[in-house]
Length: 225
Image 1 (cartoon, rainbow, N blue to C red):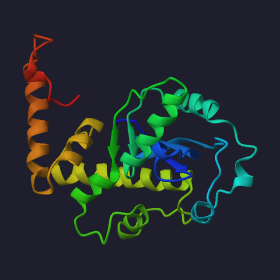
Image 2: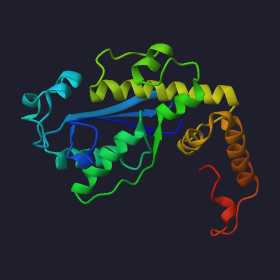
Image 3: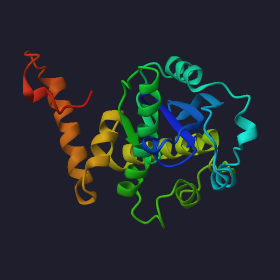
Image 4: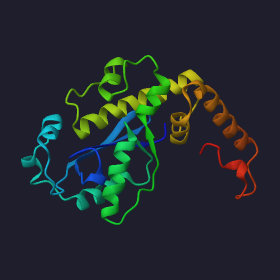
């Protein structure tokens, strides 16, 4: 299994465009079908945490007073992540906060995100809903119990990712499920997931059998890496 980094943020609100900031970050590394490493830190962005967010996450204004500033945490994150591809549950939320925080230190994200929520919508149509906790219970995955803390949610997302990749391999008889394939699946209409996978794997097989000789050839652009 390709190594991937599952990331989760807790924040002061729903949008960095409205001045909301990160209060906690966690990264869980997945490789070979198991969790191999993890990183977690509270973050003090000197922004007040609203009471309802304190109630939701359990992260209080008092807790973050001694936490490191965002720039220090972001530098540690960049070092920890390296070039690993990223995964998050509801990745549109985490990606916009990551991009906003990186912009404040004049950095840009290099990696693409795969979204375990979008993937679950396509792979598990019988799930009661696609919230992380509901999926964990529905699929009988390890439950961290304390939801809405970054490390607990990242760990549960990591277990969901491992399950998703295993089920894709088994259902479609694949030897490898790459991050690029995950991103193709999450964009496919539900009714066309199988044809999407068949087309992608066929393109890869064709590329291996007949390597493209021209770097500029468009016939190589949609094959799996």
